[in-house]
Length: 424
Image (cartoon, rainbow, N blue to C red; front, side, top):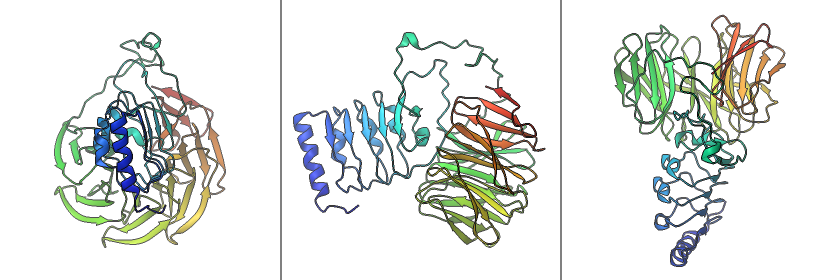
Protein backbone atom coordinates (compact mmCIF):
# COMPACT_ATOMS: atom_id res chain seq x y z
CA UNK A 1 0.00 0.00 0.00
CA UNK A 2 1.27 3.45 -0.83
CA UNK A 3 1.04 5.74 2.15
CA UNK A 4 -0.80 8.91 1.30
CA UNK A 5 1.01 12.04 2.40
CA UNK A 6 -2.21 13.62 3.64
CA UNK A 7 -3.74 10.42 5.04
CA UNK A 8 -3.21 11.55 8.62
CA UNK A 9 -4.66 14.98 7.83
CA UNK A 10 -7.75 13.39 6.29
CA UNK A 11 -8.13 11.12 9.31
CA UNK A 12 -7.97 14.02 11.77
CA UNK A 13 -10.50 15.95 9.72
CA UNK A 14 -12.95 13.02 9.73
CA UNK A 15 -12.49 12.57 13.46
CA UNK A 16 -13.27 16.24 14.07
CA UNK A 17 -16.40 15.99 11.90
CA UNK A 18 -17.52 12.85 13.70
CA UNK A 19 -17.07 14.53 17.07
CA UNK A 20 -18.93 17.62 15.93
CA UNK A 21 -21.84 15.74 14.32
CA UNK A 22 -21.95 12.95 16.94
CA UNK A 23 -21.93 10.41 14.08
CA UNK A 24 -22.12 6.80 15.16
CA UNK A 25 -19.94 5.57 12.26
CA UNK A 26 -16.39 6.64 11.40
CA UNK A 27 -14.56 5.57 8.24
CA UNK A 28 -10.74 5.78 8.36
CA UNK A 29 -10.16 3.02 5.83
CA UNK A 30 -7.56 3.17 3.08
CA UNK A 31 -5.63 6.16 4.40
CA UNK A 32 -2.25 4.47 4.75
CA UNK A 33 -2.27 4.89 8.53
CA UNK A 34 0.56 3.21 10.44
CA UNK A 35 -0.83 4.15 13.85
CA UNK A 36 -4.32 4.89 15.15
CA UNK A 37 -4.79 8.65 15.75
CA UNK A 38 -4.99 9.40 19.48
CA UNK A 39 -7.78 11.90 18.90
CA UNK A 40 -10.04 8.96 18.07
CA UNK A 41 -10.03 8.09 21.78
CA UNK A 42 -12.52 10.86 22.49
CA UNK A 43 -15.24 9.38 20.29
CA UNK A 44 -16.87 7.33 23.02
CA UNK A 45 -20.22 7.49 21.18
CA UNK A 46 -18.96 5.46 18.18
CA UNK A 47 -20.69 2.17 17.36
CA UNK A 48 -19.02 1.34 14.02
CA UNK A 49 -15.35 1.99 13.25
CA UNK A 50 -13.60 1.31 9.93
CA UNK A 51 -9.79 0.97 10.09
CA UNK A 52 -9.38 -1.56 7.30
CA UNK A 53 -6.93 -1.27 4.39
CA UNK A 54 -4.26 0.62 6.32
CA UNK A 55 -0.77 -0.36 7.52
CA UNK A 56 -1.47 -0.81 11.20
CA UNK A 57 0.80 -3.22 13.10
CA UNK A 58 -0.84 -2.66 16.48
CA UNK A 59 -4.06 -1.41 18.05
CA UNK A 60 -3.76 0.85 21.14
CA UNK A 61 -5.10 -0.26 24.52
CA UNK A 62 -7.25 2.86 24.78
CA UNK A 63 -9.44 1.61 21.93
CA UNK A 64 -11.10 -0.48 24.62
CA UNK A 65 -12.51 2.74 26.07
CA UNK A 66 -14.93 3.08 23.13
CA UNK A 67 -17.55 1.26 25.15
CA UNK A 68 -20.38 1.62 22.62
CA UNK A 69 -18.43 0.01 19.80
CA UNK A 70 -20.34 -2.90 18.23
CA UNK A 71 -18.53 -3.34 14.90
CA UNK A 72 -14.80 -2.98 14.29
CA UNK A 73 -13.11 -3.39 10.91
CA UNK A 74 -9.38 -4.15 11.05
CA UNK A 75 -8.99 -6.33 7.97
CA UNK A 76 -6.14 -5.90 5.46
CA UNK A 77 -3.60 -4.45 7.88
CA UNK A 78 -0.33 -5.83 9.30
CA UNK A 79 -1.53 -6.53 12.84
CA UNK A 80 0.64 -8.89 14.86
CA UNK A 81 -1.16 -8.51 18.20
CA UNK A 82 -4.39 -7.23 19.73
CA UNK A 83 -4.85 -5.31 22.99
CA UNK A 84 -6.39 -7.06 25.97
CA UNK A 85 -8.80 -4.14 26.37
CA UNK A 86 -10.86 -5.29 23.37
CA UNK A 87 -12.18 -8.04 25.59
CA UNK A 88 -13.86 -5.42 27.77
CA UNK A 89 -16.06 -3.96 25.04
CA UNK A 90 -19.57 -4.96 26.18
CA UNK A 91 -21.33 -4.44 22.83
CA UNK A 92 -18.71 -5.71 20.39
CA UNK A 93 -20.34 -8.41 18.29
CA UNK A 94 -18.62 -8.16 14.91
CA UNK A 95 -14.87 -8.00 14.40
CA UNK A 96 -13.15 -8.26 11.01
CA UNK A 97 -9.52 -9.44 11.02
CA UNK A 98 -9.01 -10.94 7.57
CA UNK A 99 -5.56 -10.67 5.98
CA UNK A 100 -3.50 -9.71 9.00
CA UNK A 101 -0.50 -11.37 10.62
CA UNK A 102 -2.13 -12.48 13.83
CA UNK A 103 -1.11 -15.73 15.53
CA UNK A 104 -3.32 -18.72 16.07
CA UNK A 105 -4.08 -19.30 19.73
CA UNK A 106 -6.87 -21.33 21.26
CA UNK A 107 -9.62 -19.34 22.97
CA UNK A 108 -9.54 -19.10 26.76
CA UNK A 109 -11.62 -21.46 28.88
CA UNK A 110 -14.45 -19.76 30.70
CA UNK A 111 -14.99 -20.50 34.37
CA UNK A 112 -18.60 -19.37 34.17
CA UNK A 113 -21.06 -22.26 34.51
CA UNK A 114 -23.50 -20.59 32.15
CA UNK A 115 -23.00 -21.20 28.47
CA UNK A 116 -21.73 -18.00 26.81
CA UNK A 117 -24.51 -15.82 25.38
CA UNK A 118 -22.41 -13.41 23.38
CA UNK A 119 -20.46 -14.55 20.36
CA UNK A 120 -18.34 -12.51 17.99
CA UNK A 121 -18.48 -12.93 14.25
CA UNK A 122 -14.77 -13.25 13.63
CA UNK A 123 -13.74 -13.08 10.00
CA UNK A 124 -10.09 -14.10 9.73
CA UNK A 125 -7.40 -14.29 12.37
CA UNK A 126 -9.21 -17.16 14.07
CA UNK A 127 -7.97 -17.77 17.58
CA UNK A 128 -6.06 -14.50 17.87
CA UNK A 129 -8.52 -13.19 20.44
CA UNK A 130 -7.34 -15.63 23.07
CA UNK A 131 -5.12 -12.88 24.41
CA UNK A 132 -7.97 -10.42 24.77
CA UNK A 133 -10.71 -12.70 26.06
CA UNK A 134 -13.25 -12.06 23.30
CA UNK A 135 -15.47 -15.09 22.59
CA UNK A 136 -14.71 -16.59 19.21
CA UNK A 137 -17.16 -18.15 16.76
CA UNK A 138 -16.43 -19.92 13.50
CA UNK A 139 -19.61 -18.57 11.93
CA UNK A 140 -22.25 -16.07 12.89
CA UNK A 141 -24.25 -17.27 15.87
CA UNK A 142 -27.42 -15.79 17.30
CA UNK A 143 -27.39 -14.09 20.67
CA UNK A 144 -29.38 -16.09 23.17
CA UNK A 145 -31.73 -14.42 25.64
CA UNK A 146 -31.05 -15.23 29.31
CA UNK A 147 -34.01 -17.63 29.37
CA UNK A 148 -32.44 -19.65 26.57
CA UNK A 149 -29.08 -19.98 28.28
CA UNK A 150 -29.15 -23.28 30.17
CA UNK A 151 -27.64 -23.63 33.59
CA UNK A 152 -25.17 -26.46 34.00
CA UNK A 153 -25.45 -28.79 36.99
CA UNK A 154 -22.76 -27.96 39.55
CA UNK A 155 -21.22 -31.43 39.35
CA UNK A 156 -21.43 -32.11 35.64
CA UNK A 157 -19.80 -31.00 32.41
CA UNK A 158 -21.87 -30.18 29.31
CA UNK A 159 -21.71 -33.85 28.31
CA UNK A 160 -22.98 -35.04 31.69
CA UNK A 161 -19.70 -36.64 32.71
CA UNK A 162 -18.65 -36.00 36.34
CA UNK A 163 -16.01 -33.37 36.92
CA UNK A 164 -12.69 -34.44 38.39
CA UNK A 165 -11.26 -31.87 40.81
CA UNK A 166 -7.63 -30.85 40.23
CA UNK A 167 -5.02 -32.31 42.53
CA UNK A 168 -3.43 -28.88 42.86
CA UNK A 169 -3.84 -25.30 41.69
CA UNK A 170 -0.66 -23.36 41.02
CA UNK A 171 -1.07 -19.62 41.28
CA UNK A 172 1.23 -16.68 40.75
CA UNK A 173 0.81 -15.57 37.15
CA UNK A 174 -1.13 -12.38 36.54
CA UNK A 175 -3.32 -12.95 33.51
CA UNK A 176 -3.43 -15.84 31.08
CA UNK A 177 -0.93 -18.70 30.88
CA UNK A 178 0.00 -19.44 27.27
CA UNK A 179 2.65 -22.14 27.39
CA UNK A 180 3.76 -24.88 29.75
CA UNK A 181 6.36 -27.62 29.74
CA UNK A 182 7.44 -30.33 32.18
CA UNK A 183 11.11 -30.99 32.65
CA UNK A 184 12.18 -34.44 31.35
CA UNK A 185 12.35 -35.83 34.89
CA UNK A 186 8.86 -34.51 35.66
CA UNK A 187 10.00 -32.63 38.76
CA UNK A 188 9.65 -29.08 37.42
CA UNK A 189 6.86 -27.34 35.55
CA UNK A 190 7.64 -24.17 33.57
CA UNK A 191 4.88 -21.77 32.54
CA UNK A 192 4.95 -18.56 30.51
CA UNK A 193 2.18 -16.03 30.54
CA UNK A 194 0.62 -12.69 29.90
CA UNK A 195 2.57 -11.04 32.72
CA UNK A 196 5.85 -11.25 30.76
CA UNK A 197 7.35 -13.80 33.16
CA UNK A 198 8.22 -17.48 33.31
CA UNK A 199 7.53 -19.35 36.53
CA UNK A 200 9.12 -22.61 37.61
CA UNK A 201 7.16 -24.81 39.98
CA UNK A 202 8.27 -27.75 42.05
CA UNK A 203 5.66 -30.30 41.04
CA UNK A 204 5.81 -32.38 44.21
CA UNK A 205 5.86 -29.42 46.59
CA UNK A 206 3.30 -27.40 44.58
CA UNK A 207 5.28 -24.21 45.04
CA UNK A 208 7.09 -21.63 42.93
CA UNK A 209 10.83 -22.16 42.99
CA UNK A 210 11.77 -19.34 40.63
CA UNK A 211 10.29 -16.44 38.69
CA UNK A 212 12.21 -15.51 35.57
CA UNK A 213 11.44 -11.93 34.44
CA UNK A 214 12.49 -12.90 30.99
CA UNK A 215 10.69 -10.76 28.43
CA UNK A 216 9.16 -7.37 27.78
CA UNK A 217 5.84 -8.80 26.64
CA UNK A 218 3.73 -11.97 26.68
CA UNK A 219 5.70 -15.23 26.90
CA UNK A 220 4.24 -17.46 24.19
CA UNK A 221 6.48 -20.52 24.32
CA UNK A 222 8.60 -22.43 26.82
CA UNK A 223 10.44 -25.69 26.17
CA UNK A 224 13.02 -27.77 28.05
CA UNK A 225 16.07 -29.27 26.37
CA UNK A 226 16.08 -33.11 26.30
CA UNK A 227 18.57 -33.26 29.20
CA UNK A 228 16.51 -30.81 31.26
CA UNK A 229 19.46 -28.51 31.89
CA UNK A 230 18.31 -25.69 29.62
CA UNK A 231 14.98 -23.91 29.31
CA UNK A 232 14.19 -21.90 26.19
CA UNK A 233 11.62 -19.10 26.44
CA UNK A 234 10.18 -16.88 23.73
CA UNK A 235 7.81 -13.96 23.76
CA UNK A 236 7.11 -10.34 23.21
CA UNK A 237 6.86 -8.57 19.90
CA UNK A 238 10.61 -8.40 19.30
CA UNK A 239 11.33 -12.05 18.45
CA UNK A 240 13.62 -12.55 21.45
CA UNK A 241 14.52 -16.07 22.60
CA UNK A 242 16.30 -16.71 25.89
CA UNK A 243 18.16 -19.78 27.08
CA UNK A 244 18.20 -20.37 30.82
CA UNK A 245 20.41 -22.47 33.03
CA UNK A 246 17.66 -24.30 34.91
CA UNK A 247 19.82 -25.04 37.96
CA UNK A 248 21.36 -21.58 38.25
CA UNK A 249 18.15 -19.77 37.24
CA UNK A 250 20.13 -17.42 35.02
CA UNK A 251 20.17 -16.44 31.36
CA UNK A 252 22.99 -18.07 29.42
CA UNK A 253 22.08 -16.69 26.00
CA UNK A 254 19.75 -14.16 24.40
CA UNK A 255 19.07 -13.88 20.71
CA UNK A 256 16.71 -11.86 18.55
CA UNK A 257 15.98 -14.32 15.78
CA UNK A 258 13.20 -12.44 14.00
CA UNK A 259 11.50 -9.06 14.03
CA UNK A 260 8.17 -10.67 14.90
CA UNK A 261 7.00 -12.72 17.90
CA UNK A 262 8.12 -16.34 18.27
CA UNK A 263 5.12 -18.56 18.95
CA UNK A 264 6.57 -22.05 18.85
CA UNK A 265 9.87 -23.78 19.58
CA UNK A 266 11.28 -27.29 19.58
CA UNK A 267 14.59 -28.84 20.60
CA UNK A 268 16.07 -31.53 18.41
CA UNK A 269 16.23 -34.93 20.19
CA UNK A 270 19.97 -34.51 20.84
CA UNK A 271 19.45 -30.98 22.16
CA UNK A 272 21.94 -29.46 19.74
CA UNK A 273 19.42 -27.50 17.65
CA UNK A 274 16.59 -25.22 18.74
CA UNK A 275 13.95 -24.53 16.09
CA UNK A 276 11.86 -21.39 16.47
CA UNK A 277 8.82 -20.31 14.47
CA UNK A 278 7.73 -16.75 13.90
CA UNK A 279 6.39 -14.98 10.84
CA UNK A 280 7.13 -16.60 7.47
CA UNK A 281 10.31 -18.35 8.58
CA UNK A 282 11.71 -21.01 10.87
CA UNK A 283 15.11 -20.42 12.42
CA UNK A 284 17.46 -23.24 13.37
CA UNK A 285 19.77 -22.23 16.19
CA UNK A 286 23.02 -23.92 17.20
CA UNK A 287 22.53 -24.14 20.97
CA UNK A 288 26.22 -24.60 21.84
CA UNK A 289 27.52 -22.03 19.37
CA UNK A 290 24.73 -19.54 20.18
CA UNK A 291 24.17 -18.74 16.50
CA UNK A 292 21.64 -19.18 13.72
CA UNK A 293 22.68 -21.97 11.38
CA UNK A 294 19.73 -21.90 8.98
CA UNK A 295 16.64 -19.94 8.04
CA UNK A 296 13.84 -21.99 6.50
CA UNK A 297 11.46 -19.94 4.39
CA UNK A 298 8.13 -21.52 3.75
CA UNK A 299 4.58 -20.50 4.62
CA UNK A 300 4.20 -17.09 3.00
CA UNK A 301 2.67 -14.41 5.24
CA UNK A 302 2.03 -17.03 7.87
CA UNK A 303 2.67 -17.78 11.52
CA UNK A 304 4.30 -20.99 12.71
CA UNK A 305 2.38 -22.04 15.77
CA UNK A 306 3.41 -25.70 16.00
CA UNK A 307 6.52 -27.67 15.17
CA UNK A 308 8.05 -31.01 16.08
CA UNK A 309 11.22 -32.95 15.35
CA UNK A 310 11.01 -36.59 14.38
CA UNK A 311 12.51 -38.92 17.05
CA UNK A 312 15.68 -39.38 14.97
CA UNK A 313 16.01 -35.62 14.47
CA UNK A 314 16.16 -35.87 10.69
CA UNK A 315 12.78 -34.27 9.96
CA UNK A 316 11.18 -31.11 11.31
CA UNK A 317 7.42 -30.78 10.86
CA UNK A 318 5.96 -27.26 10.87
CA UNK A 319 2.39 -26.01 10.67
CA UNK A 320 1.30 -22.59 9.48
CA UNK A 321 -1.83 -20.78 10.57
CA UNK A 322 -3.19 -19.61 7.24
CA UNK A 323 -2.67 -21.92 4.30
CA UNK A 324 -3.54 -25.23 5.94
CA UNK A 325 -0.26 -26.85 4.95
CA UNK A 326 2.20 -28.93 6.94
CA UNK A 327 5.78 -28.94 5.77
CA UNK A 328 8.31 -31.66 6.47
CA UNK A 329 11.86 -30.32 6.41
CA UNK A 330 15.04 -32.26 5.80
CA UNK A 331 17.06 -30.89 8.73
CA UNK A 332 20.44 -31.80 7.24
CA UNK A 333 19.77 -30.29 3.81
CA UNK A 334 17.77 -27.33 5.22
CA UNK A 335 15.07 -27.73 2.59
CA UNK A 336 11.48 -28.90 2.30
CA UNK A 337 11.25 -32.65 1.91
CA UNK A 338 7.51 -32.59 1.24
CA UNK A 339 4.34 -30.60 1.81
CA UNK A 340 1.25 -32.22 3.30
CA UNK A 341 -2.03 -30.62 2.26
CA UNK A 342 -5.72 -31.35 2.45
CA UNK A 343 -6.92 -29.21 5.34
CA UNK A 344 -9.63 -26.70 4.57
CA UNK A 345 -8.64 -24.64 7.60
CA UNK A 346 -5.46 -23.83 9.50
CA UNK A 347 -3.37 -26.60 11.06
CA UNK A 348 -2.92 -25.96 14.76
CA UNK A 349 -0.79 -28.84 16.04
CA UNK A 350 1.70 -31.46 14.85
CA UNK A 351 3.16 -34.44 16.71
CA UNK A 352 5.32 -37.42 15.74
CA UNK A 353 4.65 -40.89 17.08
CA UNK A 354 7.48 -42.28 19.24
CA UNK A 355 8.67 -44.54 16.41
CA UNK A 356 8.65 -41.65 13.93
CA UNK A 357 6.53 -43.52 11.41
CA UNK A 358 3.36 -41.45 11.92
CA UNK A 359 2.71 -37.72 12.07
CA UNK A 360 -0.50 -36.56 13.73
CA UNK A 361 -1.99 -33.19 12.79
CA UNK A 362 -4.98 -31.32 14.16
CA UNK A 363 -6.76 -28.45 12.49
CA UNK A 364 -9.55 -25.96 12.31
CA UNK A 365 -11.66 -28.07 9.98
CA UNK A 366 -12.55 -30.28 12.98
CA UNK A 367 -10.34 -33.16 11.85
CA UNK A 368 -7.32 -35.09 13.04
CA UNK A 369 -5.12 -36.71 10.44
CA UNK A 370 -2.60 -39.50 10.86
CA UNK A 371 0.03 -39.31 8.13
CA UNK A 372 2.23 -42.20 7.13
CA UNK A 373 5.58 -40.40 7.07
CA UNK A 374 7.03 -42.70 4.39
CA UNK A 375 4.10 -42.72 1.96
CA UNK A 376 2.67 -39.29 2.92
CA UNK A 377 -0.80 -40.88 2.93
CA UNK A 378 -3.29 -39.69 5.58
CA UNK A 379 -5.98 -41.36 7.62
CA UNK A 380 -8.64 -38.81 8.59
CA UNK A 381 -10.40 -38.95 11.96
CA UNK A 382 -13.56 -36.89 11.71
CA UNK A 383 -15.57 -37.33 14.90
CA UNK A 384 -14.51 -33.99 16.38
CA UNK A 385 -17.30 -31.41 16.20
CA UNK A 386 -15.13 -28.37 16.90
CA UNK A 387 -11.66 -27.06 16.07
CA UNK A 388 -8.79 -29.31 17.12
CA UNK A 389 -6.09 -27.33 18.91
CA UNK A 390 -3.70 -29.97 20.22
CA UNK A 391 -2.62 -33.51 19.39
CA UNK A 392 -0.20 -35.66 21.38
CA UNK A 393 0.87 -39.31 21.40
CA UNK A 394 1.17 -41.50 24.47
CA UNK A 395 4.77 -42.68 25.23
CA UNK A 396 4.08 -46.10 23.71
CA UNK A 397 2.50 -44.56 20.61
CA UNK A 398 -0.65 -46.64 20.87
CA UNK A 399 -2.95 -43.78 21.88
CA UNK A 400 -3.44 -40.35 20.36
CA UNK A 401 -5.09 -37.56 22.38
CA UNK A 402 -6.79 -34.67 20.59
CA UNK A 403 -8.04 -31.55 22.40
CA UNK A 404 -10.88 -29.55 20.88
CA UNK A 405 -12.55 -26.18 21.23
CA UNK A 406 -15.64 -27.84 22.68
CA UNK A 407 -13.70 -28.74 25.83
CA UNK A 408 -13.34 -32.43 25.03
CA UNK A 409 -10.26 -34.60 24.74
CA UNK A 410 -10.66 -37.59 22.44
CA UNK A 411 -8.42 -40.63 22.83
CA UNK A 412 -7.81 -42.63 19.68
CA UNK A 413 -6.31 -46.08 19.32
CA UNK A 414 -3.62 -45.68 16.65
CA UNK A 415 -3.70 -49.39 15.95
CA UNK A 416 -7.46 -49.16 15.33
CA UNK A 417 -8.21 -45.50 14.38
CA UNK A 418 -11.95 -46.03 14.58
CA UNK A 419 -11.74 -46.60 18.33
CA UNK A 420 -12.03 -43.58 20.59
CA UNK A 421 -13.00 -42.47 24.04
CA UNK A 422 -14.22 -38.97 24.83
CA UNK A 423 -13.42 -37.04 28.00
CA UNK A 424 -14.64 -33.62 29.01
